[in-house]
Structure formats: C-alpha cells, structure tokens
Length: 189
Image (cartoon, rainbow, N blue to C red; front, side, top):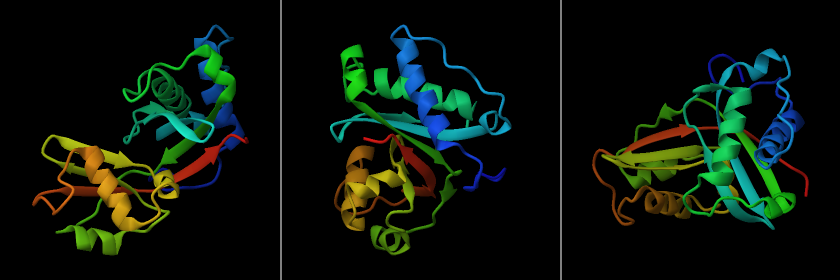
C-alpha cells in the first residue's frame, strides 16, 4: 500500500500469515513472535484476520481504520478473531492445527454517495468492494472476501443490512455507505 492507503507492492504475504499464526501459538505458550526490522511493518494499516476450520468461519475481527503499525495490527486482529469474536467461543488450543488463517490489509474507507439501495447496487463492484453500512447507532461491515460467500450484489447488501441491524426491506434515509478494497492472503490448505 502506498502512503495514501491504496494497495501497493511490498507486502510479504507469508510473513503476515506467519505473524498471525505465531501470535496464536504464542497465546498458547509458544515463543514470542519476532518483529522483523522492516519499514512496511511499521506503517499504520487497517487489517482483518479471518479464521476458518474446514472452510467454516471460526472468527473474523479487525480494524477499519489504521490504528496500529501493520505488525501490531495483525497481532491484535489475530488475537481478537480467536478469542474476542462474540459469535464464537474462544479458540481452544486443540483447534489450532485445523485453523486456516486469512489476512486482509484494507485501504482507507471512502464515502459512497447513494440515495437508495438501487443506486448502491448500481455502484457496487462485486468481488472488489468491501462495504460499511451505518445508520444512527447501527453499523455493519463486510470485507471484500465476503463476495466469495455472497456473490450476488442484492444478497450481499441484504446480508450486510441484516448484520448492521437495519431493515431488510427498503432504505432508511440518512444511511451512510463507505467502501474500501483489500489485499487478501490465506494460508495453504
């Protein structure tokens, strides 16, 4: 990613995945994860870490806004996906060998001006856009990787509205939309 938050070159996907896995191993008593002296690991980045077992979601947590250097952002997201995702019980050590880890590094979210759902659907880039929908105190986020599970735009938006706690039918005036992209890597099976 470049300094403006857009995707770029320079990430080492295997290193990012090893930082995430090493963080979980460390939590169960393994050695501390070494911090390589690489400048790109010190740049603040927004990151999501997804855990899967046998292809099924086991945890997914991250930050939409860059708050930590990339090294720490991956560690925080990995710990939170494993132990703080309220949809799942904390990861147990016996599950660790079966867990497959995905790391997504996000671009900065940008407002997407839309006045209704039809306009949103016309502006969506399936397989590319991550989205945040918010209205008052309700908010939901899907990273671009969710397109693999929900490839049809209407279904994607419907499930995101459900996640945000928004009405499934109709469009609430004042609903805000932000979009972002991500670079994504996953561990080999």
